[in-house]
Image (cartoon, rainbow, N blue to C red; front, side, top):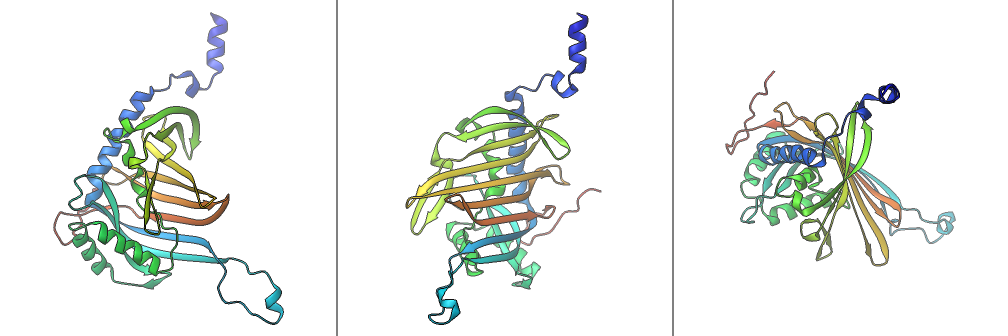
Length: 297
């Protein structure tokens, strides 16, 4: 008996404690995901996207002189786009699935439109949001020179709602340190591509099943991070898209995205990195004009 007690006392407290059951952790995750689904459409944030991309060489190159014999390297592109950001449901879609919606207000430090005009457009847009409006939003991004745009990653926690969890295979994958918190890691995989990532290649639309890791705080099961990735072949090239989404509690007490890092990798070479960060979310009324409620002190 003495030997057993001695061995237990030598174990770190976190190991001596029994870890929560997976079902209990997933119940807490579902609670937070359901809260995000209910509260995020009532909130607004400012999103800053920094994109770093490698583009094909310019079509122009000298035919004579010293430059003609030099190999033409890919061009590096860096863009910063600031937008007013919210989420909503698609009109007449028949589902309550949320999608991201944004209005660009500045590109590389140059104003595009005023904050008040952007917020007014958001308030109108979320009442009539459809696929045409979302397509126009992506076309605006392309107009500013952005490539390999990734959207809706900030909402990936919605895969873990009570309704969504039956469509996932999940298993525990150990523990790790995440900042000041000890986190339990859960590996997950979609069982079908029907609700997976949507990719547009020309006029073709393809869906891919996602998999990744969910990080939850060991002490209470609070979701802290969701990682995801997809791999597939495209014209004999191996394509990988991966993302890491960090979540934080807002002043209103619900979970919301704090940052997203998305990487587009072709044949093991990083071509595009999108870094999104979000300012603290503000809650607005259901009026057409966006009016913010004061957060409690």
